Image 1 (cartoon, rainbow, N blue to C red):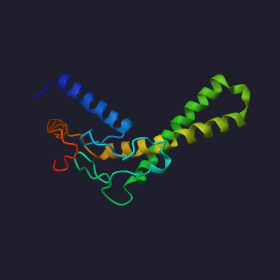
Image 2 (image 1 turned 45 degrees about the vertical axis):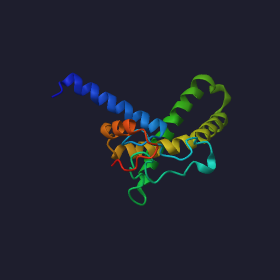
Image 3 (image 1 turned 60 degrees about the horizontal axis):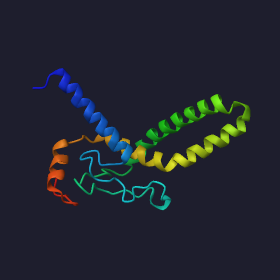
Image 4 (image 1 turned 180 degrees about the horizontal axis):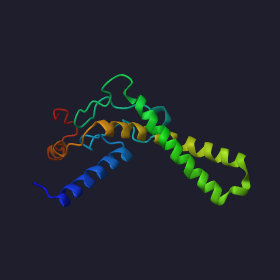
Amino acid sequence: MRNNGDLCTHTRMIMLEKFQSSLFHKCPRCLEGDMFPDMNPYHLKETAHMHTHCPRCNLNFEPEPGYFYGAMYVSYAFTIAISVAVFLAYYLFFREQGTVFFLILLSVVLALLAPYTFRTSRAIWLNFFNKYQPEIRQKLRTSNTPDSASVR
């Protein structure tokens, strides 16, 4: 049985791994498989294309129709956070430029970050509902096969 210190450390490690999974668009269950066939979100024709299942552990990325509608709320939160950050930068460094400058700056920043925000919102949404399973990750790493769909 773990003591409280070990439990806190274990929980922090899992949270860090889930955070990395969200940032780098990896499978939330095994942290090995890519969620998107093309990992560059700025290849705009491929931005929305997503694997239906994890190529490593076979986790279903689309468990039901409309599953990713909830990711819009995550994307909305990102947009608010980015807008506040841009406003603070504007207020501290470019206040004399006027409101039109702020609106143009905000529009450009949001447009440039939109593909990454879109994908990261989906990754976070998947991480909300899928538990990381380190035993599957360990099994995948020891098997060393590029397609380990038999692991479930």
